Image 1: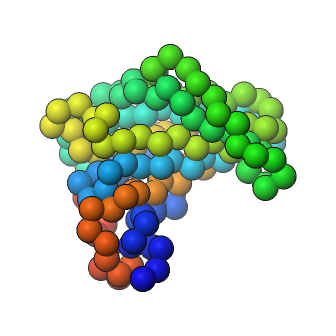
Image 2: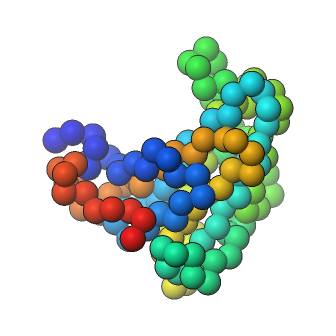
Length: 143
């Protein structure tokens, strides 16, 4: 079986897009903004795919950064629990990865989104799928 459908179900253009967590244990958000510009990413939870009852989710305490071009290793960064991740205007923070577990969502919430306030690209991967499927049988994540 291919990794797609076994290990995860990605959304490649996930900036500001709600992702349904019902079929996975968590979401891995992969972010990139070139030119050492720095960015702010904000995590929000909602009860519906349209953003019903949306509220920020202040559970991010750790994330990783690097240049994103394979020339360096990932650096763990920690912070007090927050709904935002701020990457510095440094090449070593062009790329950022943060993971959010489904158990972190408030009761009754099942959708997550990460939004860039700049021009950062956000990709999301619903991971640890509860049911593994062939790629063509994966459910749409934004519903």
